[in-house]
Amino acid sequence: MQRQQSIIEESLKAVMEDEEFLPDLKAQTRDQAYKSLVALLSTPNHIHKSFLRVALENGTIVRIPAFRVQHSDTVGPYKGGIRFHHSVNDEEVANLAKLMTLKNALHELPFGGGKGGVVINPKEYTVKELNLICKKYVQYFNDILGPDKDIPAPDVGTGEREMDWMMGEFKNIHPGEPYRNSFTGKSVVNGGSLGRREATGKGVYFTFRYMMHNFVKENKKWLGDTENIFAHAALDHVEKKSKIAVQGFGNLGSVAALEAYQCNYLQNKVVAVSDANVMLYNEDGLDIPALVKFTEDHDGELPKNEEELVECESKAEIKNRDDLLEMDVDVLILAALEDQIHEDNMENIKAKIIVEGANGPITEKADSYLADKGILIIPDILANAGGVIVSYYEWVQGREAQFLTEEEVFKRLYDKMKVTMDTILPQFFGDPFPLRQNCYIHSVMKLSTIMYRQGKLY
Image 1 (cartoon, rainbow, N blue to C red):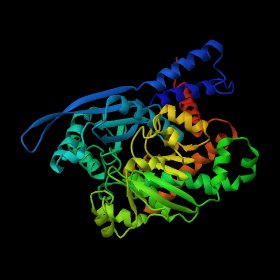
Image 2 (cartoon, helix red, strand yellow; image 1 turned 135 degrees about the horizontal axis):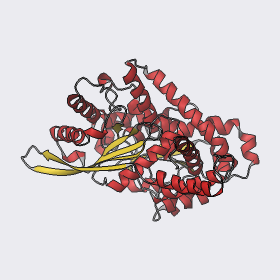
Image 3 (cartoon, rainbow, N blue to C red; image 1 turned 180 degrees about the horizontal axis):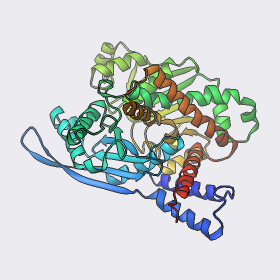
């Protein structure tokens, strides 16, 4: 995630070089403000670490590392998911918390950035043990959590079940106090929002659809007259029947794939999908609804052999999961984990458009290499904000005890992301910076202005 830090500093320089930005800051004072902003945006406010003491069902006592990083509360209470994964560490969680601060600022949400993690593979624990781990997490970090302090949500390895358990424990610890909006991403019956599970995947596909169907089509002449390499990459695909590959077929990837399959605005065919076990390929397009139904009945896993493909009633070739990234497709949706495209495989990427559903799926060197090649990357900070946007709607609904229909939730989600896209895209296609850089510039400009107004630069 070093790339993230580099872009923050580059974006701050670009912002501070504009003399119309915070014009009261002059000469040395302006330089001091820049250094202060770099320090404030680069480091978290708090890093909380603990070892959860958990009694397993076999009688063994284990101590499991757990984290909660609170990056910034400049705009509002900390907000960010809790991931259960064996590779979680404090540096990863801190970088993800920083990304949440920038993402919330980009999309004009009244939240700061936070993130949590527990170092486990959830598949290695029983339901009872996972329930206890969730309760212990809330107990150990109880003092820093709350509806107006820090509001966790699901992430990799967690879902509505875990959020229900955590909110229940928070309620037990704080009898008589507001608790419903202490966690988001809960089940609907427990105060969650309709559409929350699908929100991230829908938002990921919507950013691609809106850019290609709405913005590019409506601005063909202007984009064609520019020398912007990314504008020409978009124009090359706007009328094309795009071959799409989706890495990751969990909540995010499966929903994004289904949105692409069902899209009436663009000519798509999803030719490849993968999960942790396998990649499925069909050059004529996969039956995504059938695959989604299969995963729902098989612990979230795609068909792994010919017998399971017959059961799924789906035609596909079974291939190595790692081959998906280098396939000859037009669009690649990254919906798995971090650092999937890196120095060792970046030269083999054939897709001309990449959509980051996961957080940080492209390393710094690979990001620079692909951008220099004119590959259009819709970055995580823009594309995968659907989850936190609908989490915001859930948080508001919990405060007001008035709940939106699923149709209302998705309409508000699209309207919110449309406003962001309409703010960012004209700037992006009008200058040589990659889209990620443009998003960061917008975020740090907002955060810098608020910090200055709050007197945090003195």
